[in-house]
Every structure is written in C-alpha cells, then in structure tokens.
Image 1 (tube, rainbow, N blue to C red):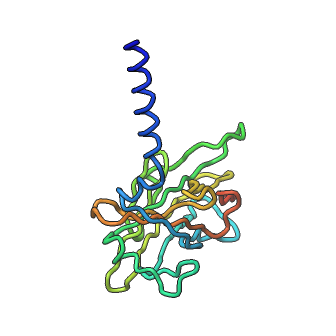
Image 2 (image 1 turned 45 degrees about the vertical axis):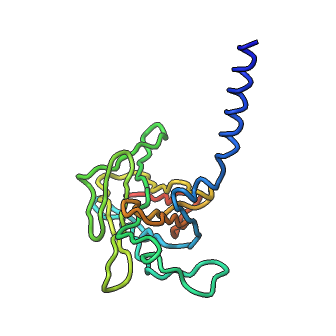
Length: 193
C-alpha cells in the first residue's frame, strides 16, 4: 500500500511540475520576441573567382519598426545590449555532392563587429552609440573553385533566423526573427570559377 501512495504522490508531483512549465517561464528570463525582416545582407555579385571575398553584413538602427506598432522599438533601451548575434555557415560541395563546412579563421576577414568561428560562424553586430545602430561585416575568402553555400539557422518561428541580444546585461533578452536577401530555403548557393 505504501508503494501505491508513493507512486501516486510522485505521479501527481510530476504532473503539477509539468503543468507549470509553460511559455510563462519566459517571464522569469524576461525574454521578448519580434519579427523584423531583412536585417542581414549577403553582398552578392554576378560571378565569383578564386580569391574573391563573399561579404555578409548586418547594419540596423537601434529603433526598429515592429508589426502593428506605431512607435519604433528602441532595442538598445529595451535590452541594454551592446551586441546582437546571429549564426551562419559556409559550406562547399565536395566531389560526392556532400556539403562540407569550410568555416575557418584563416580565410575570414572581419571589417566590423566581432566574430567567433567553430563549426559555424557566430557574428556579433556591435552597437555604435554615435550612429545609434548595430554593425557587423565579415568576409570569407573563396580559395578554391566549386559550388558553395551560406546557410542561416532556423529561428524561433521556424521560418527565419534569429538575431539575439547579449544576455550578459541581465536585462531583457530580445530575439528578432529576421531574414537575408537572396536566400532560398535558408541558403544562398553560388559557384566559384
């Protein structure tokens, strides 16, 4: 009989805890979400040759228009964040038609912002107080001929990808679902001659 009581108590406690895990948990973390399209730009060109540089940039105002809002959102005031990050990858198709990650620091050129490169590229658009905007620009030197693609990781809404404010300020964490130009099904594919 004790086993049944303990089993019942454990099952009831588990159900009550599961019932409390809702989207309301984000209130604890002070997270907010919005959608603003086209905050990232892949600087495309008509053709690519070996040693060309493919640039990706993100330059956006601290004041963003939101859907169904008449006043722009001041993302700096909302988040106290000096940077927003997003992820992307650079891959090359090998002779077996398999995509291989080629992101490495040796072929990367940083013009504005910050970057961290591992299996993917974490780009950081840094706040420029005098311009009241966030800026990132990074380039990948294309060292070999072949077929390449840049990919952006699906975001919280499952369609776009995310720009996320730095959470080290203990302020509101803002996730912006955004998009980039020339992207088809999450990728920009191109050929280097």
